[in-house]
Length: 347
Image 1 (cartoon, rainbow, N blue to C red):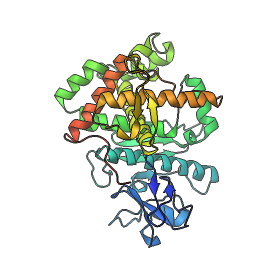
Image 2: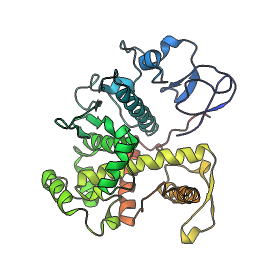
Image 3: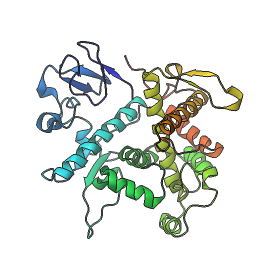
Image 4: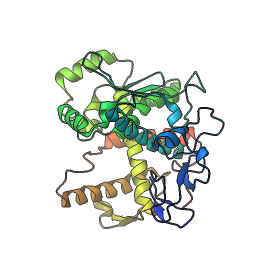
């Protein structure tokens, strides 16, 4: 995610800002322009921004509901009269807007189910109970998220129970949208499906059996050589979704590094000491992308260790995983033509 600038005073702003911290002008994010703009007319703001101060995006032109294109994708939300539910919903919607920003930058298709019965996308954010638990997942374009995942204590407890190094709301959304794009971009293309199976395995294997086996026996001892996470070892579909999510992590984080003009040193032995100026990275070059990623994540982990915190990036990208990431990268390039994933955005 890049930094933004107030059109009135040139103050640096974050993606989430709804008001300039320097001049006080109201700001709104314009999805079509991919930047923050001055909000001269409050009626142009998303309904959730006007009524709840919960969204800083401009409303979708022509949408009679008054919602922005992100909020309009939410088909079911929890009872907002409950304060805890509202807090969770705000966090989830914020993560979803960040997700859509990245999808737009990669020029991936995002169409609501209301606009397209076939291939449309929708979100359901639900609060479960002991009698009716909510399972986070994807089914035919509908992404369901248990809103308890927005609670840090719940999420950290689940992370420990599952033996995960990383668990966030944004990570969940990126993972589930991976399942959605497998349906949209891979499933019905015989050539791509063959390439997918060569790297990830045969998705026709019983998913139910794979789940039962994974939770009974766990991941194979050598999973780190073949998969980006232990969960990815369960079934080719989950391997794909975990790899897809990881690619989105990379694209977003490297754009942040570029926006801040970070300069880091390449960690690879054959390039050790070489300076990498992140604002010169181009996402079309997979080698440059991954070299920059290695350097940035090494710096991230070193900074965290200096603060006595756990690694911000608890992953190891093996050669097998790198090949899977390359497949995702090349798939995105192919589906949008020869242009690079990562729209050149105005400063």
